[in-house]
Amino acid sequence: MFYITQDRIIWYNSITCICSALMCGRICTENLERIVMKLYFYYGVMGSSKSANCLMTKFNFEEHGQKVVLMKPSIDTREGANIVKSRAGLSAPARLIDPDASIIDMIKGENPDIIMIDEAQFLQPWQVDELRELADNGIRVFCYGLRADFRSKAFPGSLRLFEVCDTMRELVSMCKCGKKATMNVRYADGKIVYDGEQIVIGGSEQYTSLCHRCWKEGRL
Ligand SMILES: [Zn+2]
Image (tube, rainbow, N blue to C red; front, side):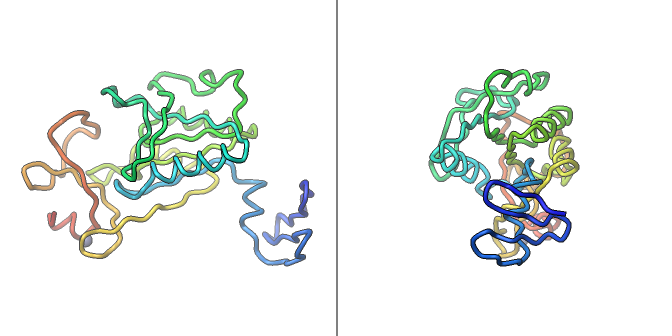
């Protein structure tokens, strides 16, 4: 079974492609993704450059004439909350998604090529299902977010993304011990906090990321 696209013939079942130029016949996930993968979830701990990746990807798409809508959940209502900002200094205004807002209604009549969502862990699971629906109808959706909270429990929005996305990719960050950081760590007064509300906005707690062992053993 194969699909003929504008410039390529792609063998679907065998996951190999025949590029019209190269006749390479190798496994070609890039071309396969063009056909079947539309809802992406890029996940990582705090400090893994999710927002920077989001903004750079947005810039690249727009440079190629794609219409991009940048959005983020409105969980944080402090001043400047409607901006996606990376530690590297990039920033762009984003449309806020309220917890009870339909994303499909928000973009009705706009026909974007691409929807990009930062802080996607704060989406409601039914909003993720809406993104799935939009992806099924030809809009490419890129979500960036945390996998789990400071207690190592998955955010409901992230869990739903893992369940229904076409492609998930980890953005990696390093623990101070040199291992891969996998845990988002909440701490206060120099000590790791292991319990409490999943979402606290504007509290005195601070956050960092550690590997599981450093987190478990309380090594900040
Ligand atoms: Zn560590």
